[in-house]
Length: 456
Image 1 (cartoon, one colour):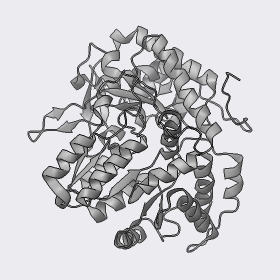
Image 2 (spheres, one colour):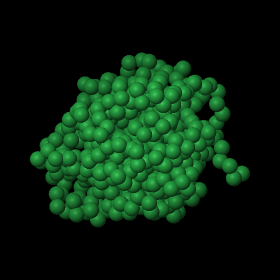
Image 3 (cartoon, one colour):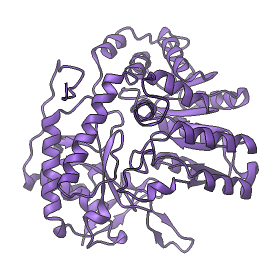
């Protein structure tokens, strides 16, 4: 059939808050014009993030009832470990309460002041954990990613030539490890090819630098490889995932994405000495190494979810949903990053709001306009989240001013996305009225979560 349907049926429903525009305006003002500070009950369609916001399957709920809550060495831990190892083949596996905990342990044990960590695209918590210990997070996105509208595949790749230059200049002394994020969330949810990963690994091996995969959306990346990389048509997503992980020395993972769970993650590696450091800090801050801050039922849900994420029918439906929304917006003239990513639609806020400068935070203006218009919550991925400061304190704009609408997994239906398309279209038609914003309160790290703004 031509129609790609959801490969599931709905067994339980949850009421959506249907709100009025006047209420949304009041709620947004009370939240300091930062949608992160809104109560969820004020949001109709919540596309703030795909992290932990998905719906779990009946198989996951059933597995949770078998959760073994023993403090050490539970059956649930063994199932979790077996599943992660079946996919990744890493020697040492440590559960954590979510992905940023894995990032923090990695940064705290392997980095020191002055170190450099290259990546195809550091996302917010990864960069913050690296910078918190005094190291520098450097993005090396592919040259193709600079054209937001080209239909080039695998725009999430790392710039191999730039990596080679960086390693030649700095060497192993300042680069304890390199990261590669699949898919590249910072760059529009774009995938990374296996060919690019192999080329990156060859360069790193030449300099003795380990490779760490940020594997939050590894299954979505595997689907892109199967669909668009030569030689992988018809290959199972599990086999592709295994090949991806075989190129790495370790991985961080938020199971709140392609683990299809509401909480959890893991840190994994092959190096025995690294594992000792990871284990010691994990015990200090997360919990015993066989639960890592998670309940046994959470470990069960993740073990099932990781395999469900690798089901081809599920990935086909998910990618078709994203492409459906993307095609509708392109037809209406709305500027979005192309091709569509695996988990979200990325609006180009700079092109959407040409009357606003980067210092006016057009992404914040667009996010707030979407909420006021239809109760749709999105997130800014521009100069608030990714902006930096010069030594004199001046703001340095992000490379792009994007707004992400992340799709929770197995939550919304086609009519919900038709509504989202309509809201974006209405805002696009009235885009000249979107105001500039100024920051009136901010934190030193991850300011986008708690900053407060004032419209100008």
